[in-house]
Image 1 (cartoon, rainbow, N blue to C red):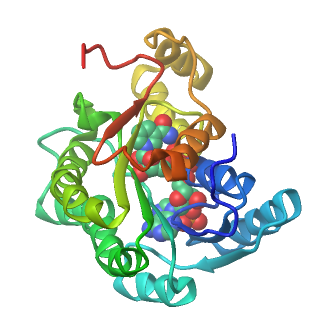
Image 2: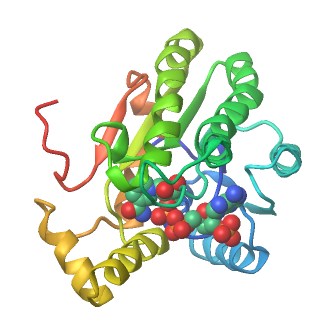
Amino acid sequence: MDLGLKGKRALVCAASKGLGRGCAEALAAAGADLVINARGAEALLAAAEDIRQRYGVSVTPVAADIVSEDGRATVLEAAGPVDILVTNAGGPPPGLWSDWERADFIAALDANMLTPIALMKALLPGMIDRGWGRVVNITSQSVKAPIPVLGLSNSARAGLTGYVAGTARQVAPFGVTINNLLPGIHATDRADALDRGVAEADGISLEEARARRAATIPARRYGTPAEFGAACAFLCSTQAGFIVGQNILLDGGATNSVL
Ligand code: NAP
């Protein structure tokens, strides 16, 4: 299917690895030119070169911390006007409800709520002026069903979800859609880090921790960044213009709910 993205310009944040990289690759495969971001320059430059070679699109890498105000300004300046924004950043650390102090919550809110909001605030006006735009926020399955050890994530992502629910309906009249993609467990470095924590806590191997988690998922496996990216590219497509303010789970059936 031609997604109508040839020549569109997409900013994909936190995209040298994992789910952001999956989104960047799927958008590039659909013909979009990219601005990609991550903090570590080495992996980012390698990702940019790899995507350029494989898909023949223009890729501008910008090494910066998207969560810091300065880093965001650098990324936005390099990006210029964009048609597509994919927001993403590292997730907060796991812990117990009683572990977290105000500073921990502020850090989580900064990364997973206020950063995507700041990016939308900066880029939505241009999309509205041009009469077309797509925003996809990478959030989490935890928005639908809380993950107890990820209380910081549960809190910050719920805040972003509330903001998107109202904002998506305000920008839709101008041809701009905002939707959230909610990953369940996907095979990335982040999943490895979470599984390593479980392995250490339970005195089991990493493979055993993975196998135990996979057994709880109806699909009996982890998702892949490529599958995740394909869903993102579809939400960014011309065909997806009537999908507004939705929260779409990609979790292999892990969230046990009717709706
Ligand atoms: P990942 O494999 O660890 O990749 C994270 C990517 O983001 C890397 O490219 C990293 O590069 C970049 N990054 C992290 N912090 C950044 C920052 N402050 N500024 C710019 N770039 C940054 O993680 P992932 O699994 O793709 O997860 C992406 C998001 O989805 C996270 O918020 C995670 O919590 C959420 N999520 C993931 C899963 C899962 O199963 N994988 C499930 C639910 C939710 P640098 O380190 O070089 O900056």
